[in-house]
Length: 139
Image (cartoon, rainbow, N blue to C red; front, side, top):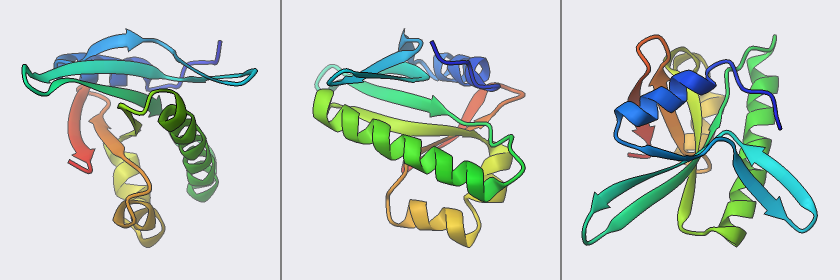
């Protein structure tokens, strides 16, 4: 089992406060003989007609010395997981969960904006102290 991210429990509680049911902790991704683990799987009833919305959440703290290096690693991991999910459970969407501070310092500048403007990442922005979701990107 992988080591839990610093903000793992805060993100989990934020999702639960937002009426998500945690279905997997961690979420197993398997392709061929390779087994990987995303942090969380969750689902939420949208409406009787639309049914359940299912997501996978990968939590990232960006605690390293370089935001760029952390972003490279997070994007690479996100894309790898996204490709596996598209093949194995295409009804699920993957989100990268980050703190509000990381969102402001990494994803509001030009480099981080590239991934959002070009719709390469979905973000879940969380106030880690209050354990509440601030924003889903895209909404």
